[in-house]
Length: 262
Ligand SMILES: C[S@@+](CC[C@H](N)C(=O)[O-])C[C@H]1O[C@@H](n2cnc3c(N)ncnc32)[C@H](O)[C@@H]1O
Image (tube, rainbow, N blue to C red; front, top):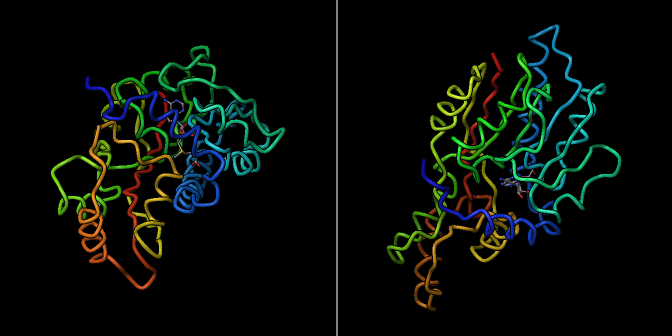
């Protein structure tokens, strides 16, 4: 098992710093959550006896998913977990019990959850550690609803940096199959999946990079030399090749997975 390339303490610090500005730029994250909610509602409806009473949002961030989950599953108690305290402080009041913890080491009893939701958080984790932890807390017949990022994420930025130097400037996320394999090895059965590239747009490279930083997604874990003036110019010119009518795109290779514990 290899560690995720971005060290956990750096990811946590980046999200703690990002919390205040996060909601203003998280359009793609919202779209991924909205899609996940409809998949979750469909998966729950497909099992008429399934009435979740305890749902965990693992890596809940500022809590965008909570009102939707509360509306869709009004009988359920919601637990909102994140390891960045500043994210938890931004939650809408009264919707969920906040828990500051690492989702790879859940401080919850085995089989104590009916469903687990996780949107755009698992890409920061090691699937072989996170999936067993989530599966353990789920009761038999419980459901897992996930949206995560795949290796095509920020592909334009990776391409553009290739024209600048050989350093690794952009995080490389695991292919969806790694998540599927880890889920199955943890005793979960896949009941649905979907993959699509969602795009955010920015007027110029400076704002695009600022948005990525605000989303906490700039951590690579690699130590890099600062870019010089000519390197910035080369990066800007390379990125311009991707410009479309809405501006410069940032791709988010998004994978949705729905599974159930056997
Ligand atoms: C991109 S944000 C997504 C937040 C929210 N789910 C959304 O869709 O807006 C990822 C969140 O996952 C949290 N996170 C990442 N790794 C985590 C871990 N191992 N344990 C707990 N939280 C984690 C981060 O602190 C951050 O708040």
